[in-house]
Image (cartoon, rainbow, N blue to C red; front, top):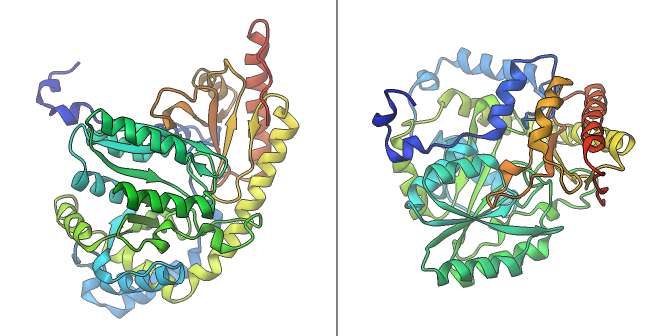
Length: 417
C-alpha cells in the first residue's frame, strides 16, 4: 500500500501486466540466463543493411513529412500496400477498412476500448495469448475460456459456453482466436474448422477477432500456404476483425501492424486511437512501406522459415534426448513456440526459481489459461536463442525437472506424447 493508492481509478488499480513481459525483463537483466521466455525474433535475421539503405534514402529525399505528425489512421501509401498484399492472401478490403497501429497489442487495446463495457464477456481459447488476456482484463471484461482440440478450438464446447453465458444474461462481445501457430500452443487450426467457425460467428452474431502474427512463418510441414488462409478471407458478412503485424517478420522495433474490419468499427478505432497516440511513427511506417515495395519482405520470409524450422527441430530433439520420458509436446508446424505438458502434479511456476538458479528461464503455462488450469504446462520460445544455447538450455531445464520428479513421493506418472 502507498499514499497514492487512493488516487487510482478502479480500472487503474486493477491493471494486469503480462507474464511474458515480466519474464523478458528478468532475462534481459541476466545475460547468463538461457532464455526460452519472450517470443522475440532472431536478431541475426534482421536485414540491417537493407534498413540502413532505406533510411538513408528517406533522409536524403528530405521530405519534411517523413519526420512530421501523420494521419491517425496511418501512412496512406502503406495502407494501400497493405490492401494489395491482403488481397494476395484472399482478403478483399478497402483503405477505409484498414487502420495502422503501434503493434498488434495496440489493436487489441483499441478494439477492447471500443467494443467492451465492464462485465461484458470475451471468449478466448484455452490457453491463449497473455497480451490479449491483459488487454481484455484491463477493460474489465469477463473472460471465459473454450477448450482446444488438435485442429483448433472445440466447436461443441464453444456452443456450450456461449449458450451458458447467454442463459445467465451476459453479453458476449467477441471470440478471440489465433488460428495460425497459436501463441502459446503452436496449433494450426484446420481449414474445415475455420469455415465452421465463420459459419458459427454469422449464425450466432458473435464477432471474431482473428490475430495472425505468425501466418507467414510456416514450415515445410505445411504442404500449402492455403492451410494458413485467414478466416477473414472468407468473411462475406463482416463477422471478422483481423490483426496482422510486421514484428515477427521484419522487426519488432518498427511497431507497425494493422487492423482490418468493417468500416464502421474502424472509424471508431480511429477516434479511440486519437486519444492514445494521435498517430503512430510516420518514419517507421515509411520504412516498412519501402521494405514491402522493394521486395525485402518477400525475400526475407522464406529465409526466416528455414531458420525457425531448424530451431524447432533442435529444441524437439533436445527435449526427446533429455526429457522424452518426462514431458509431452507436439512439434509446431510454424511460429515461435513449443508447448510442453508435464506429468500430473507438476507446477511449472514452482519450478521457475530453481530453473533460473540453474541458468534457464521459460514462461509457466498457467498465465495463458483464464480458468485457473494449466499448472503442468510451459511455453518454450525457440525463436531468438541460438541452436547451441537451445541444446544447453533444454539440458539444464530437464535436470531441474528430473530433480523435482525425484523429490515427489512416491513418483510422478509419466506424461503421454
